[in-house]
Image (cartoon, rainbow, N blue to C red):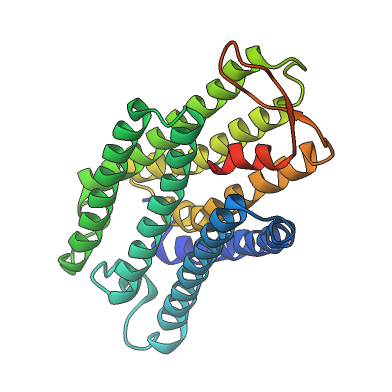
Length: 288
């Protein structure tokens, strides 16, 4: 097990609070930028960022309540280790439900972007939707399994195959969609008259954000498979990390290409390439 469960939970709360503060800061900056814009980008990005923030806030509140119960309110009734070992506790599966829902929402946006950037191809949409639905079902089966767990069960013996499948599918979705988006940006470069320089920052942003999130999910998977309680620490940190990646990408696109008033539009072969405003860069990112 390595680190004790109670210490892992305290460490998890520390990192979750730290990353949550970063998320709130980036969310406020993102909101200021998006409120100055209009159209589909604003209607899509603001609600998604807000829902991610609400879920991350609820997740953090649940973790704070659990810490208070484990180390303050119930300290005379039950040890902190025993408290956190109770998988069937309502707050335990409440935070798991929040995490699963947050993951599915973030993956939905990623698949949608990939679908739109690949000319709304069914070859992208159908596999993407299948994986999303499979992952959603898997995630909520995990929640149901926790409600049925006995007092002697651990997270490493309860729904082990489902948990492994969930994080594996999440990582596959992130890596695959990020790769397809990056390839599409590079592919359309060949039909731009002004070269690849304008869209290179966006390509870098996509790869970096995808790698950051995929690394977090991979860390959860590896610590879980190794039987380490450190997976609790990484898991709680990834909750606000989803929102950080989402907002950070918007901000990077804004500050790296926001100064370009005319940006070449990627078109199909044989069509004339014309200038367009910065909003098309946002449209490409948001899937608008």
